[in-house]
Length: 390
Image 1 (cartoon, rainbow, N blue to C red):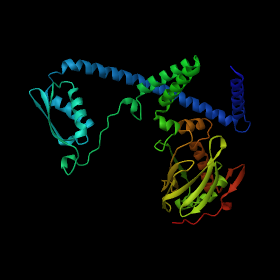
Image 2: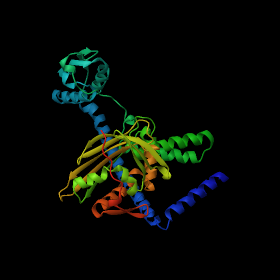
Image 3: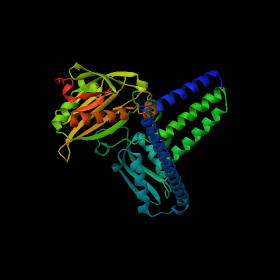
Image 4: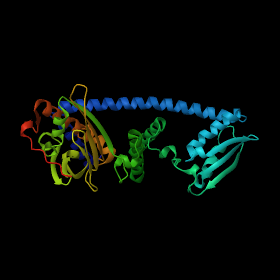
């Protein structure tokens, strides 16, 4: 090990000791880390059990399909038609426009179909157990035009299992195992072989763990999906009172410890500065997308923001006469899903920040005060709320 690695390891170890050994917050951080480790172990165990069941079901299905090749050569006509119809529903956008019949032991297809779906459909039908041949009497059209049988419908896209958004448990387990093997192989190599093994192993392991597409995992591209957070809290106060506090965004930095600045830009737009990874501030502008007094408020960050996000807050009266506040937040964190998960290990992600601040909101409304920034914050001292501008 060279001097650089020794120094980096020593620095990381020292930082970890300081973080978890802090006399004021260290105990809470250690408990959170223990809970995260337990949760991770539980998920890994559940995934292993699911993968075993998945593999067993696949093996059983493959055996049935293999034996069916011999047993179903003379399947009853009604059974064969049902099998063919099932495949048609998966492969074409207008399955209701296709008729299925049996003539001389062969499947006969009639009706309307789009040209780009013909070859795929015929190939799939020929592979159905019990099908000895296919008679194509379909009326093929390049475009739907005004034909009633080709209106509406949903285009079917055939994607391999590897290209699916959500992988099956068996595939995730296989990918994770292969990723671990590649990382082990990379640790024993050097040069280009080491880099390639480590990169491929890390990618496969991350894909298996998070079960998200690679663009989501690293947060690259405009089409990358965001992290979704849903929270609900019950506050023992009338809706009008709760809404008045949560619409007063200029006062948020006074009692929300993870929010540095909230400034009105006029015409429904606002400027925000929040805590980012390692406490680095991130700023973004947002615009109001919906505003119904005592019912709902919604926003969305403007294009090009440092933290793309959108959200909605709904207010409903609960059974006890108080207010149920439901928050749905969608955001694309720096570093994608990996960045979000790393931050969550240290309780520095948006979910933990939101939970902390909602506790303060509840205390502020129900008790009239809360603690933030090491001091007591009284509701009567908060900055007056702005007047909404259309």
